[in-house]
Length: 106
Image 1 (cartoon, rainbow, N blue to C red):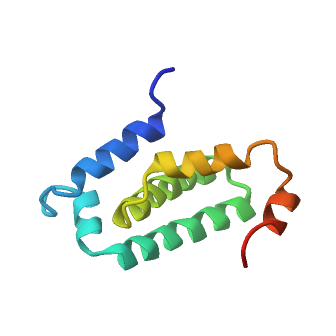
Image 2: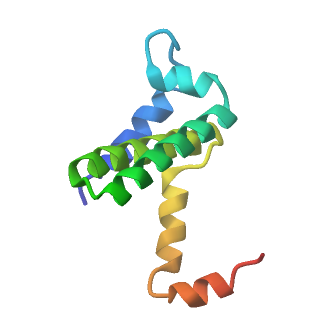
């Protein structure tokens, strides 16, 4: 199976962890710590919500790409691999969302 765009992006983000923050936006963001990475993810998520409400498909597409990028940066900041997230989605595959949510420890 060919490598997915998200896999390549996650690998690039991981490679930027040790890069010079003066030469890489990703390295600069990661150097600011997980809290800043989470804050930036939240900002991008809000921007995507705004575009979804507005109904601008082009802008929503662009903001959704930003959300995915910043989600991967946030995950990397806490050493959570994309593969782990995908494995969790695979585990949930075929399970009703209502059943899955009811089974969570809250």
